[in-house]
Amino acid sequence: AFRLAEEYHDLASLVTLVFTTERSNAAIYLRKYVERFGRDFADTLFAYYEKRQAWASLLNAQDSSFDVWLKEYVEKRTERDPHGLVAQIGWIHDVKMNDFSAAATKLARAGRDSAEVDQARTMLSLSKLAFVAAECQDGARNEVHARLEDALEMCEVQENLSQYLMAIVRSNRSHAAEISWRRRDDVSDKKAVLDAAMLTTTPEIRHERPALYIVYNELVRCIWNGRMLSVEDLVDALTFPDNMPATDSALASCSSDDAEQCNALIRERYSLAIDILSRASISLSEQTREAALKTIWRRVFLKDDWSGIRKRLGGNVPDSELRAELARTHLHTVLESCLATRELSHPDWYLLPADVFAAADLDYLVSARLAPRFASELDAGSGWQPLTSTTVPALNKDYGEEDSRLRAAIKCGLDSYYAEVLRTVTDQVNQCRLSADADASDMDAASSASTEALDVEDEDGAEYTAK
Image (cartoon, rainbow, N blue to C red; front, side, top):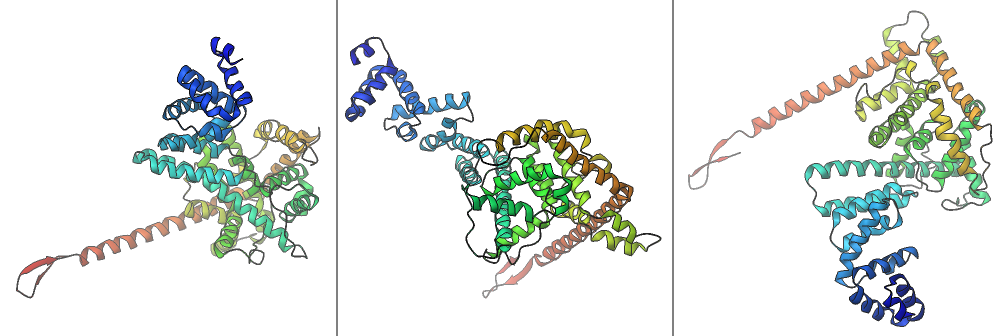
C-alpha cells in the first residue's frame, strides 16, 4: 500500500497509512515524506489534521519549514472561510511566528464571532495585547483600540446584567441556596430564568405585550447562560423591562465596584442602549440602526405617565414648577445622560416622539428579525415552548400597543414637554461647559503666573533663572 501510494503520488493515502499502520513511527515517516514530496505532502497532512480537528497536532510543527507552510495554509483557509475553526485558532501560530498584527486581527474576529460572553471577552482582550505587541501606527492603533473597547463594553454590559438578574432572583427567594448559573438546563435553572423575567416586569406589560414578553424571556435565558446577544437583542433586554429596581441589599455580597456598576447600568440603561447602538452602528445596516433607535426612544417616552403629568401641570403653573415636574421624569434623566455624560451628538441620536412609531418598521422587526429566529431557537431541542403560527400577528399586536400608548402620550402634550426638557437640559449642559472652560482659563492663568522666571543668587553669588 505504501509503495503504490508513493508511486502514484497519492499523498492523502500516504498520510492515512502513516497514522493507521505505523503510528509508533509516524514522526519518522512524516519527516521522510516531507523531504521527498515537500510542501504538497505538508498541505495534505495539515488537511488531515483539520478534518479530524486535531488542532494540537496541527499547531505543534517542529520543523522550521513546517512553520512557513503552516502559516501559508492557515492564511489560505482564513481567506476562504474567515469565520471557520482554522481562522479562530490560527492566531496561535501567528504568535509563534511573531506576526502579532495577523494574530490580533484573527483574535478580534474570533471575539466578535464568539457565542459565549466569557470566550468573547478573552479573545478581545488578547487581541488588544496583540495589537500593542504589533506596534501599529498611531492612527490605526487608536481606531482598532476604540473598536475593541466597544466590543468589550458589550461583554461588560451583559456580565452586569447577568449579575443583576442573579441578585434579583436571590433577593426574592426565602432560602439562601446557590442558584445554578451557567450551562444548566434543569428545572431549577428554568425556574430561576422565569423568575428573573417576571421580577423585572410588571403584570401590566406582561398582559399588554405577551409576545414581546416571550421574546424578553428568551433574552433573559441567553443572558443567564452566558450567551452573547446581538446589538438589537441587547437593546431589547435593556429597554423592554419596566420594573428594574436598585439592588443594594441583593448585591451586598459583591464588591462595591461591581454593585455600583450594576446599579449604574439599571439607572442609565436607556442612554446606555443608545450609546451601545452608536458605537456599533458602523457594523449595522441603516434599517437595523433606525429600527433599534426608534425602539429605544419609543420606550423612553412610554416610561413616564404623561397623562398624570398633564393633570398636575394643568392651568397656568409657574415656570419653576414646570421645570421641577419635568426634571423628575425618566425623559429628563435619559436626555441629561446622553447630552452631558455620554456626549452623544445632537440630533444624530435623538428622535422626536412623532418619529418613533413602530408601524413603519413592522416587516423588519417582526417578519425578518424576531419571528423566524426565535421560532427556530426556541424549538431547537431546548425544551422551551416554541413560538406558534400566531407569532407574527401577536408581535404586530404588541408593537401596535406600544404605538397606541405613544399616540395617547402625544395627545397629552408629550411633544411640548419633550421640547421643554431638551431645551432645559441643553441649557444646563452648555452652562456647565462654560463654567468648566472658565475654570480651566483661571487655572492656566494661575499656572502661567507661577512659572514666571525669578532671578536668584546661589551661595557663591552666581545668578541663575528658576522656573
